[in-house]
Length: 274
Image (tube, rainbow, N blue to C red; front, side, top):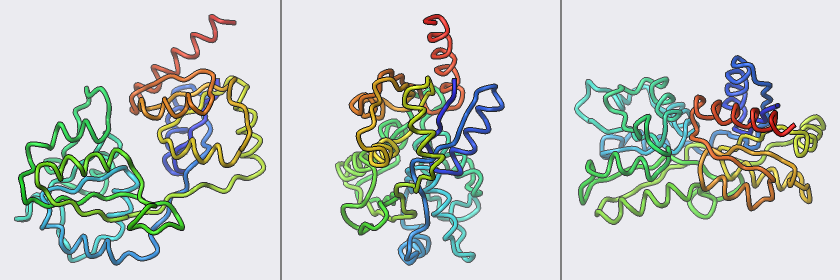
């Protein structure tokens, strides 16, 4: 049973290696392309005023990496030894690990606990809500669609918008900064053949984003997915995959351990079915 990993390239390749080390046949087929913003001036401005915020919410590991790649050498942000104790808020363990890799002090990171039912904006809000008071400022670091105005309709993330509304309801002021651009990948001939084969050969599509699913539909318009199998890492993603016509859809938390448990369940199910 082959696993098709659809995350952005560097994440997809890392997941494919980790799954392969656990005896799964895993292939990276990135369905999202990530790149830097054309104009980093807003990012530089955000770093210069980092101390004005009680918390900075990062929507993903990509947001962390791209935000920190723009960090000025003179800024001592997210350092436990400085007076400005701005918190770094992560929606899940992958984002938290990215913060650690970028040198953020562990005691300044807030994220849903490992036992949380889901890792998303709602779970994060339950952790950080008591930190925010009326008049506080919060920064949300997010992505934007390529070729879109990053200050308008191209902004990504329904969960992040929900998070911003919760902040507004308690009287906090919310700023956004776009740290990276996201878009559809360019498929090679091999990629097209792999995707078509995986629509009906028993492969399991691993979806961690509805955007990846949207890009797949645009790359293969008219493709039937009624014989395809998918594993989605959030209920909202699972609903979108079902609506796209996938024949079998399972849900999992987004950790490697949980995904592996679900994959083993799928493998056993289809082995019994044969």
